[in-house]
Length: 541
Image 1 (cartoon, rainbow, N blue to C red):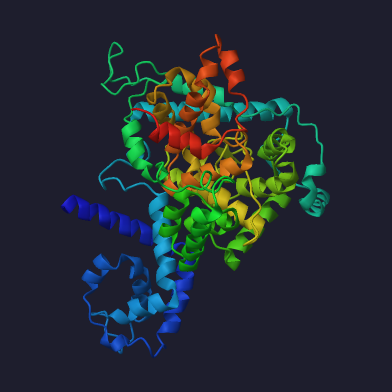
Image 2 (spheres, rainbow, N blue to C red):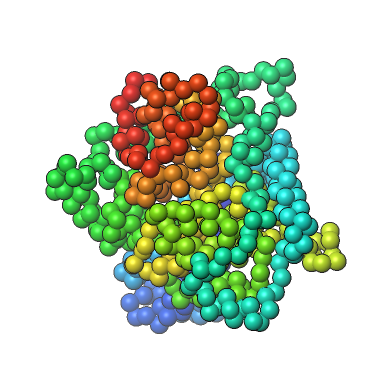
């Protein structure tokens, strides 16, 4: 019980500290100052004990902090007691819901806190051999990037001349019209390179190849991590059961819309009206109606278009205009090779450049390195190699993984500023909450545990890209609805296994890896939800 209370205290302290640095913090402080003169709040009669308040009302302890801070020298305010007036005010004014969503978002992003006595490195990765492998992989990426700089005789970063800045600003909305020669630029790494690293990982604590009972004996990855089996996955994804209505199945042309779709849309509109992030996350487990998806995803991720947020995006744009980075060319080539050649997304080419170039300058992304096993790469000011005070993260957001399709899949959103929304979504989903885990081991081991251990060479690229570029647009969005709904990437492994099960008859006839890859080359005709439901709930386990 004491350990549980300690964990709760650590979580509350961490969330309060996080919220102090947010725009919500400044908004609350302004509101607290205004509320001191609100006759509806009788501060002189506040009665509840502070300690009990902090325990039972964690959602509004930040607001109380402002009252305490502002009124320390006000003799009319009795801080030794608290009353329901503040709670009532927060409810009626809408601040309680905003705080609730902010806290819920923080809980979804950050892992459970470690024991206070744990070494700092254990907060990110407790296994020493995994930390060593991570470090070696990061050095390999940096070596690749530096070699490219040397071969091409170009710097990692340089300020653009005034004329070039003006030109880029003028063509900001038409960057896709450029056709620079990028043939000498190469990806920093390919998915197969990372797979080879994972296949070579071994736990040095086991001698003579001895592994625990949950070792994946036939798998390509020999790291002994405990992952869910099919019964556990069925329990975890219970809302995907055959008896539960789903967008992607029950909204098809064969099913009258009044049976499911109309009611689901009505409930979605109600969830949006309530502005409750937790309710929205539960709702999208059955899929998002197209017209509501933008607003629901923004609500789940606690993304807003406050003036200060829009201003931050404009500052990132200014940074792109002023400075030229080597990774800009890598991003440009990546988009040219993916979205530009995609029948669905070539029309979004200009938007992708804008969003991804701004994202590369977004230093707020660095915060995920506090809890992920990775370390952001550093560069040094010329002539100051090895001197830490002259070190800077490169690129500014710390992400050097321009190896695979970074363009992803986009859907036009008309409910808020579209470019801001996509950038915020990229920041919140792609790294801070979920997609930095795309190269984590657990999903790949889960796939192998589902009985397809030798098929990982084919499915690996699907999973590291979250199926972006492989599924049809509508199907990919239905899949990502569930990723957000469950706040987990495990469903990628389930879908990958379901694809193999669906194509099993054809695969039984092949005699080589190349032939198997040919059978699975085109996934654009697959329907996500039927595959997931049949694999999990219509097969004997």
